[in-house]
Image (cartoon, rainbow, N blue to C red; front, side):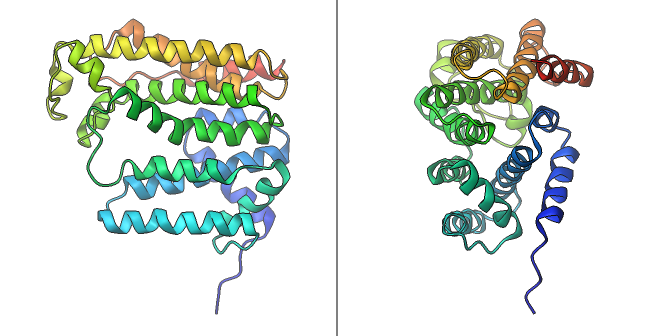
Length: 285
């Protein structure tokens, strides 16, 4: 017997619990949205976590690729209104209601596929930009439509903010990624500071690495500035969740700049009180 799919209310509650349990500032930022839009964002978040877990899981490469390929088929089914997975079912209404684009979902899967197989080590600036576009900016392009802003300027805000957030994540997770055999810092900047043929096992001890991180931080700050300029041209109320995410991650980057990447064994974080302050601040706009 095929198990019954959960009701819409059950699915929404399960997705909300999953996002909240992650401890992410994303949950509190999305609480600023009306119920239907919030549920749509939780479904998108859960989809992103699902494909990310496939890429980062312990299965062999072929199993991971098959898992991502199955999600490509499932996304097609979502757009045809005939999904088979509970999570995919939760995406059907948001896709129709907010006119989400198939290519943005596929871009997210393509980004996760870049992490399958040989570990990413010192990509070119162009390859890193493509990776950031797929795993972060594509999510932003889905998000702004759910927020209620389907326009080129909203897409521009999503493109820049996604890159800024992802570069901030990369700078925060240098040691953790190195432990997984990955180095997302761009080859051109590594070579500029004398880090040639970077070895993930020893890269955090290289004296030139803090300078590399500072250069990446400059790129991230430029994207934050471009995102801010684009968001200023968007309806203020609809952009509140994006403003919260921008503020939280910009604050995190500021803290890393102060720490100056002198201790890669100490992961910089933003206190929960700071995150909640930004939710309150932008929630009153």
